[in-house]
Length: 228
Image (cartoon, rainbow, N blue to C red; front, side, top):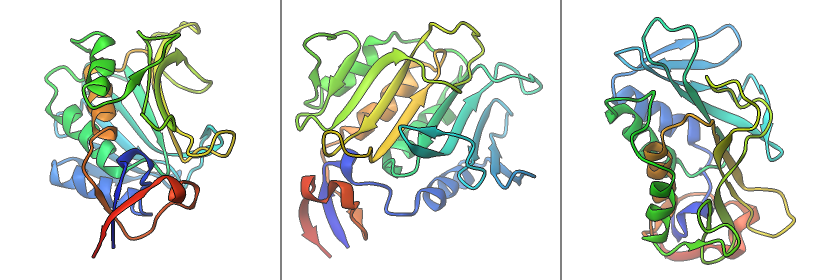
């Protein structure tokens, strides 16, 4: 067992499905297997959803398969979700857990109360740097390997607002410039900024995290604080 920093390059230890499924179960969300080989979790009030879709391999972000899709709807019987968030394999499970805890605790999961600045404020409070050219929309870690940015949405990111020129938060880790991404995340335009801020702030958390397996792409960028 290794204890490593930074969290945003630590990977998912190959247990992203188990860790997030355990969190959802502890929160009391119900689970159903689906006909497309996914696992669908729904909160007790029916307003929040999470689906493990890696086996279905629906699409990719940054060349990586999407593993988890999160969503919220205004009413339990609403046919359409208000927003969606997508996370590939490799994303640190601690950050996704904190996102889910914030989603579960939200009184208005389908609509945000904060503005976009909340995301960047949370990151800069933990030492991340605003982009010099786009200080109101983009921040990067001090090692310039991971970015959180408000961008034009990539294809297949579904939102209740059908316009195709909307901005949504995107996050990605690129341990080596020009090499494959370690993980990617994409939030549709209507995703509440405070929930994105919970994910981003967790990414930037300074403490070491435990890992049994270090991601090969980032091994040279990780600091092993101790071994157990």
